[in-house]
Image (tube, rainbow, N blue to C red; front, side, top):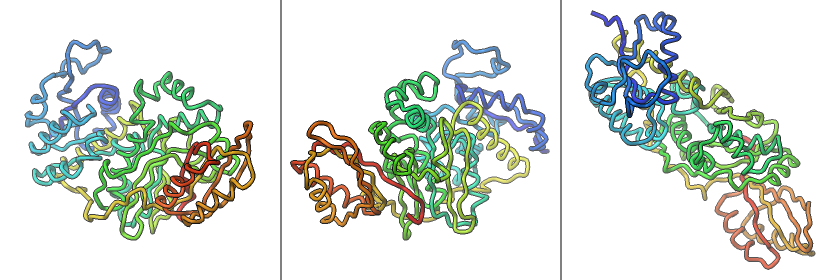
Length: 433
């Protein structure tokens, strides 16, 4: 006899977990019509029962024992929204071993241990769904796995961290420096008290590992993604970028180039007319290019209680429909290949460089000579400010290998006319740059 109710076990009842519970409650009737069965949260795992909580119908189903969820045969779907690696990974593996479908929002686990989880799901005839692990409420995982499955994905480029995008927007629009913009983001709740994972690019790198694995059908882990943050970006860099026709964003970039994968996160000068240049504040956007679909962009809130809950509940509905129709493993692991991930030194792009030099004749010629020896050609040069005997110059190169730029700068910083190399930011202009 078909089950009249699909039972859910919820691991975690924080910001996202409570949002999932409320969304399932508020929209229970329409969800039941879409699935063909009722969906009910049977148990919720919390760390303590003593924590003060708003009045909720969830009180009676709270538990501190994970076995009440993982070992309950009536629970069909386990939803992990605890975050972190331990004990979340162990709980997910236990649920899969029990043959339960798992829905998770955990980018940390999926970015580093995705293969282990997919292997376990296949071994035990279970499913794992993870739409909420990237982009909050933006439906990008299913889009890549299903709607764009007929394409060869050429590139994925996106703003996938709302904290850094808010900070850079404040710096660009309001003229604030990094420290001021960070404090504002923390005050509004867009940045954690310890924002390191966001501002150093590590959060975005985890999300890019997931996107690149799906997009290029080859396993890319967090550890293989180059990550560089925004802490060195200054109002001067933003002003120069605007003068040159660019804006600065923290971008997650993945490309397949001759059978090898680029996967990197770092600040980027991007043309003001690029679709990603207009994505501001805490919003996220992911720009995908496929051989058949061409360019497509996915835009929305990349984090937050209900945007993330929206993605989690979408996966719950998909899992429930599969259970109703008696199918599992319908969309399993799609990493069929083993493509090499390139080191950052191997990538080719353009570069913005800001230097402080001695204000005297011949300085630029000396710099240009070093660049020429490393096969680096200059596209534009700006000299703006002088401070006594020093001058600030800005250079933009043509496309060149990163290793060449690094070697050139190693030589340049030793020149007696160079006071400091103030910043180096990569420049992206699209596939035809």
